[in-house]
Amino acid sequence: MSKQTKDKDKNPGRKLVAQHKKARHDYHILDTYECGLVLTGTEVKSLRQGRASLVDGFIQIDRGEAWLHNVHIPEYAQGTWTNHSARRKRKLLMHRAEIDKLESKSQESGHTIVPLALYFKDGRAKVEIALARGKKEYDKRQTLREQQDRRETDRAISAARRRQRA
Image 1 (tube, helix red, strand yellow):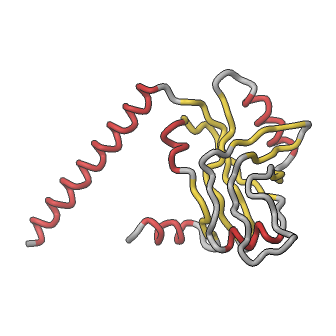
Image 2: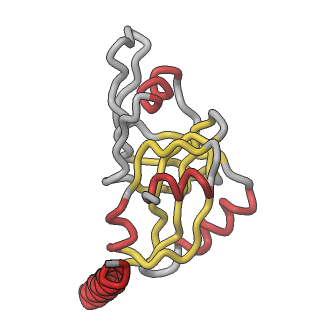
């Protein structure tokens, strides 16, 4: 069973558009939230084509509102004068209590708010954001070592199973 099939089983009605894979490598993820997005029509059409990048994205809280900055949603090819700018800031839709909690936590030293995934859930554009703390270089090396060890043990187990079947 592939990873995509597993994701579909866990979240029916969820279509992944973009994912920031490096965020889990660069940060310790402390807490995650699902937020709605305020988008224009051409942004939605561009997202439905599966075009977006979260690599440089970050969330900033300004006057009690959460804003998504530097997320690249390219212009819609068939758009006319109504097209959007690719890197404009976009408002996030969250409950007031969640915004207040995120704001207080992000003020702490070393904490930031980063986007992890952009997807459609039941036809609505959502973004998964995380309160995160930056990893030190030795933490990154430790994480890579753990991933390599896990891969090696999985390979050894699957090789042993293949030998048993033969």
